[in-house]
Image 1 (tube, rainbow, N blue to C red):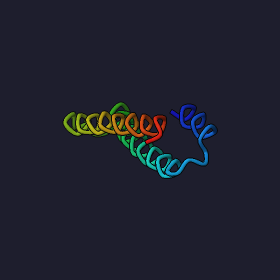
Image 2 (image 1 turned 90 degrees about the vertical axis):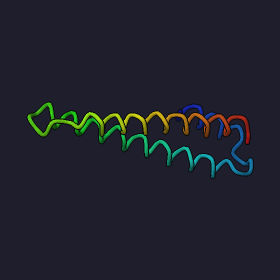
Image 3 (image 1 turned 30 degrees about the vertical axis):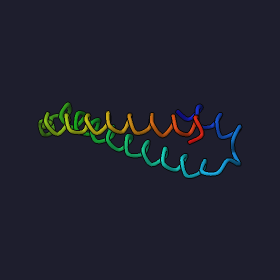
Image 4 (image 1 turned 60 degrees about the vertical axis):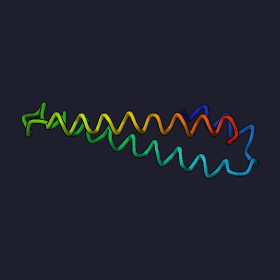
Length: 83
């Protein structure tokens, strides 16, 4: 995603709205990273004898990841297409 955004920005740096779209992509990717960290933290804790992971909670986290992936894809598509 970074290379797509960086390459596109180099070509269209002055186009109106590019900075705002990039900011939206960054926010969405930050949320994805947070969800991934939550899942990894829970699974690592369980593997080290910590509390058993609530599978429903993990399923919810995974659903949020999928939704976030869709959001990032859409933002990148709009950025690349110039909308």
